[in-house]
Amino acid sequence: MSCTNQRTAYGNTLVELGEKDDRIVVLDADLGGSTMGKMFEEKFPKRHFEMGIAEANMTSVAAGLAQTGKIPFTNSFAVFSGGRAFDQIRQTIAIGKLNVKICGSSSGMSDFGDGATHQCIEDMAIFRALPNMTVLCPADANETAEAVKAMARMKGPCYIRLNRNDYPNVTEEGKPFQIGVPAVLKEGNEIAVFATGYMVGLALEAAGELEKEVSVKVINISTIKPMDEERVKELVKDCRGIVTAEEHNVKGGMGSAVAEVLRKECKPIEFVGVQDTFGSSAHKYQEVLNYYGLTKEEISRAIREINELTKERSSRK
Image 1 (cartoon, rainbow, N blue to C red):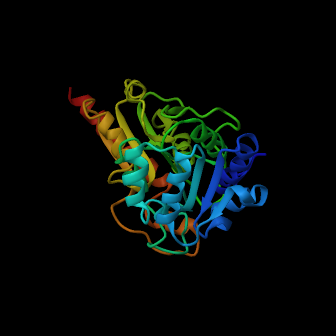
Image 2 (image 1 turned 90 degrees about the vertical axis):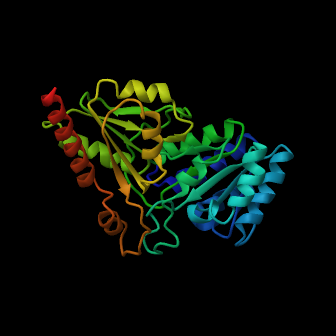
């Protein structure tokens, strides 16, 4: 069934996977009602483990379960999944290449009401710096469902970040998820926009509104690591400039990953994202997005800026 909330899509998919494979087990850290781990608990109570407010212990238990042949999914808010349990993730799961799946729910600014302590804008940077770790950031609920299936199929540690709020789907329902492969959602040949998570939809809106000004290619980067480097290079070959858009700190996130891949391409890049600052509380999600420039207007500004810069450079040659 189609839905527009990543957490609900995640919970539904865990249940679907659990029905087909009894190796699937789910662990929650007192947040099952928010992460939607409760959906798995209701269906498979003997394969769900409520670990309390103890992410580090939950992660260690998941590592042990993986060593017995289970496929454990750990669930908490993104800020706690990687923050409180980093030592256990690094020392046991990443170094040991254990088959543990880590879900960071309510990532980015999506927990708008709880402020900086609960708004995780550094998780992609943390997880992609760990050797052996796969890092996923699906664009919407449709892609979340397929990404979770891909997580269960792959061997080794994997982290997925999910948004808290409802928003429209921009990807095709039921399309198989290929880890590492960027997807072109809109063709264009002047400026390439790499976007991830919630920002993918905004990038498509911005590109559509600028259609008469500049030809914009929109690329969904739903795998932050590993990234198909040759494919990324191929996608920007005919473009003059690049914009990246993410609901994450511009230091160390998806934009940084793209820039690392394109470091020898000599094309200007503009980064749209959280500008190296912590979040703050708001009454509504849109309020915090507006305040930190996570909007289609900011993506449009960046596209225009890169477009003008590259046209000026071309005229000087």
